[in-house]
Length: 298
Image (cartoon, rainbow, N blue to C red; front, side, top):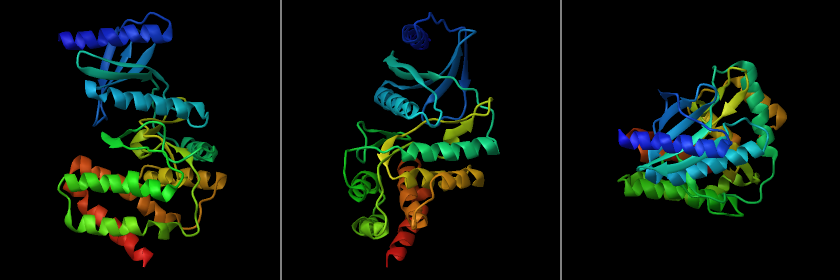
């Protein structure tokens, strides 16, 4: 009980400093939906904040998330919850964000999100990678700077996940076929040269919503500078985005030829990550995607 009391006292104190107004927690409610962190809504009766809690080792993860949200907000395209304060105390790390009450997803809001995402992706960035490593789920996501997208994807996305899979006991055909794919990646980019764009990085349906005022919002990013197609591919992996979202994006910025092939390549990264996070239920899907990509390269 003392640990929890110390935590909430530290959160309230840091929020008071960050906002310049005294903040005392009058209400707090546990929220559902997170599989990596605990989530809470806290309020002083007038102002509310969304707070994530993790073991103290998660502070670097929260610092990187705050930096990513700050950069997304600075782009002035897609709405994100603004990070307010973060820290660690009593063996726990926490991140306090602007609280945005969500009210479902409407067709108009999702079409707006499609246009906003295209506008985000159109803003040029200086290189592939990012200035910080961060996390995808709870997995380390390496963001080493690179001037060459294929090299970046080979080493820091697929190659890194395959190494984790080998360490987790997934060898054999996954590794053999995965190595073949890494060697042949350039064949998927013969007439396509991606330019660096700021990506959300983990844009599945559970990380997008709509405020009660009807404004689209995205959250829980794993940002980096990469091929815009990687964000779009992720939206299709688990569903949750209506056709109006894609139509609005394509109207604002049409997709290049070969996207359907590269969609499988980009989603392989997330399937491998799910294999490493959640176990062998994703092995067959990963092997199918690799086999499909190798067949298309013949």
